[in-house]
Image (cartoon, rainbow, N blue to C red):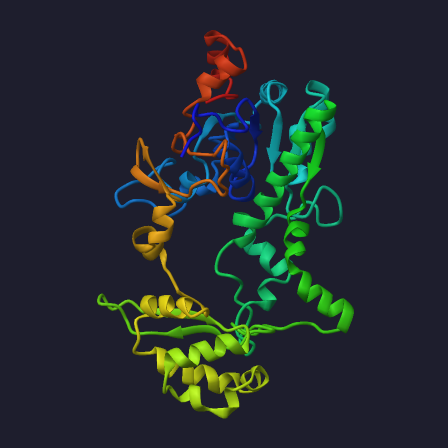
Length: 414
């Protein structure tokens, strides 16, 4: 969906995106979805690792075919600038001077070496909004530590709480902070800074320490410790107030895929609805499970009995039946389910399909929110590596073709 005239709320806003991998580019992708001109600064001297990552289509290789990278960099332009080359800082500052937002998730050490601190940016662009996302912040004893979401989850306590109590911590199976927490917080901060600048004419520095952004999601565990002296441990799928609360094996589908259902019961009324649906299943007539306290005390036995009931049932059909009687339930979906079979996501047109020059028609995540009057949308697939270098150098930075050739010969541009 697009607005009547195709306008998006961030049209006219330019972002000089000096970030890489996950948290920074995903924040930039959100801004691009809503109209910002996001210019990804890349370099042949140090290629973004996601460009070389997986998944890739069989038979495809190179910098432009990683679906992971392409999904998080749609609607952007790629500009190759080697920040290690003499004269590169002048080009970088020239771009920042013509931008509204500077975005980076690099360590303070790199930012200082490149001469791109907030104070230095303000010399060429006094009202710049500079968003820095170093993992540990701009100050402190760990400020130059490196890491990704897989490092942040153990550092912030998430991994310690993930998994079964009798086993080692397993984390969340993905770089969760990179996808949601850190980019989401960054985008909110940037939008607040844009509003402030519109009202006052003043830019500002945004410091989003990724460790603090993620720690903000750990409130209950931290409060349990500070209030009660309790260090929470892993508890699998158990809930502190719902029972049953877990995933249960169902019948395999026709192709032999494992099928599971998630069921969460929050009160006795929902439990009674579940029992009516299950009719004569063993757990429906077991007095141990008649109250929430009883279910909590005998949770292992309840889960075993519930699993015996679900084992022969179709997970998707059972989930719909449970939802119909007021019990929270869902098929445990895999990627095929979400892309091919989820009628809800399909009807809402969440996924976008864009034609990429090297990967062809490919699936992209849609905008994270829907605005009624000025909805975001994807206008173009991810850029090819360096696709827009000449265009940006001439149209945005104002260099002549001869000057671009000189900068290229000097190794500044490529």
